[in-house]
Length: 389
Ligand code: UT7
Image 1 (cartoon, rainbow, N blue to C red):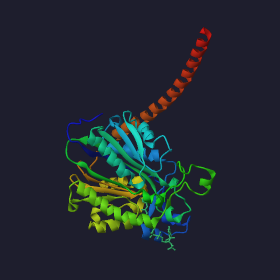
Image 2: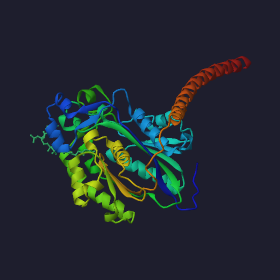
Image 3: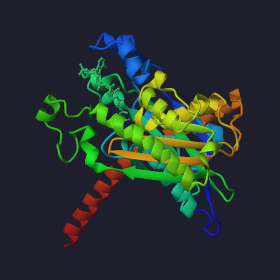
Image 4: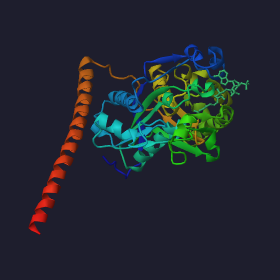
């Protein structure tokens, strides 16, 4: 549905959800695989455990988070105009993971695309989604960050495999003429640092070959120290810039939701911004770095911990491969107490998604039948034309 373009519009967050695979990998378990220790990982990163997908994929993680966001907002998937999935670990090179999620959700009226900006991806996607709403192009946008980094880390490289985890988070945005929601966004990029955090193969520069596989070029390579230096600088600057653009003084910031890569980076930013611990959300200890999923998962946990209230000013700030960074100032506008999930609502929701799956299956079968029948018809038509000649 296109929004009325005549009045100023704001993108409000009306739904939120997260999903992390239940399978947990602790530091001690990792220490049995590579030359590391629980003490080293805790001290240098703050990470204690991370979630690792088993049978889940990026699309299924994204779907579960999105379903929760729709439950909170209590809206029909058909009302969604656009689905954006921020990810560096898509289901395929193409089609977009967002298209798979759109289909499985039953978001029949939505466009869908993936957005690639590494760990800054969610803030970039939020910025695009909010911009679509502000411009009047769309009214209801689903923004998801979803990752399965466990599928692209080198499990023999202790410098990277201890850092990452899997998960997804989703926010539902809706247009409103009332002030609030996403107030400002700041996006940045410095491609001169592109080699500092990279998966070197699988793209057009180094297409998959026996050699790329043998040389482990399809896994994450990182210069940790350089990324660390970059991160501490941009987190502080980007947070200040988003607040300034939104005309919100730093003293009125109620909660910083930073990208969860390393507790030391978060602590450094908090200290530089003179923010007390209660104004900075941290959950890196339980998830590790879930890349584009880390900010929405952290926001949802902050809401669940009752640390977000109507009227609060929030900043979400991310950084990562590109090098890229982004921040976004938000005024929270709606109550965070969600309706209890009654057995009736749960059943209704299960039925809705089963029906979507069934319809999707039906469309696939029909497409095959249609293709087969069309071939037969074309052949018959060709024969008839031949006979008539
Ligand atoms: O989303 C954005 C993605 N990335 C990041 O945000 C990462 C930013 N960087 C970091 O968080 C940190 O640089 C790391 C956590 C990756 C590394 O911490 P560090 O304090 O910068 O360690 P380092 O790379 O300087 O390595 C110190 C030592 C080295 O040994 P030597 O050369 O001093 O003998 C490493 O080989 O620690 C060694 N080391 C390990 N030791 C035990 C590296 N990884 C491990 C490990 N266990 N897992």
